[in-house]
Image 1: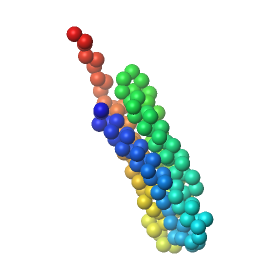
Image 2 (image 1 turned 135 degrees about the vertical axis):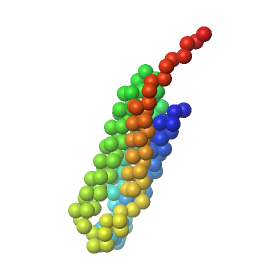
Image 3 (image 1 turned 120 degrees about the horizontal axis):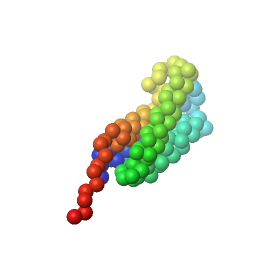
Image 4 (image 1 turned 60 degrees about the vertical axis):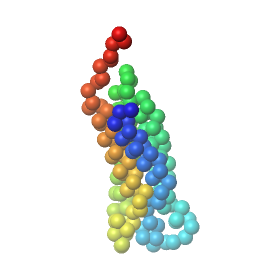
Length: 141
C-alpha cells in the first residue's frame, strides 16, 4: 500500500476517534457545570458528527486513490480534509469570540486539537497522492 494512503487512513482514523472526544470545556467557556453543558463538550454542538462523517468518507476514498480514478478520489479526499479543517477553524474562531476569562487553551480540549491534526495528516496524504508521479503499467510478459 502506498505511503500516501497510510497517511490518509491515519488522518481519517484520527478524525473518527476525535469526533467523540471532548472539544471544549463548558465550565471554562460558559461558566456553567451541569450535565447538559457537559454533553456539549463532546464534538461541540455536533461538529464531531460532521468531522467523523468526513473521516468515514476519507476511509472509503483512500481505497480508491490508486488506479485510473485515483486523482478524482485524491481531490475528493483533499476536499474532505479541508472541510474538516475549516470546521475546526470555525470552532476556534467561535471560542475566541466568546473570549473565556481563563484563556483559549483552557477552553479547548483534546478532541478539537486531534481533529485538526487528523485533518492535516490526511491532507498531507492526499497532496502526496496527487503530486506522486503516475505509476507506469508493467507489461504482462
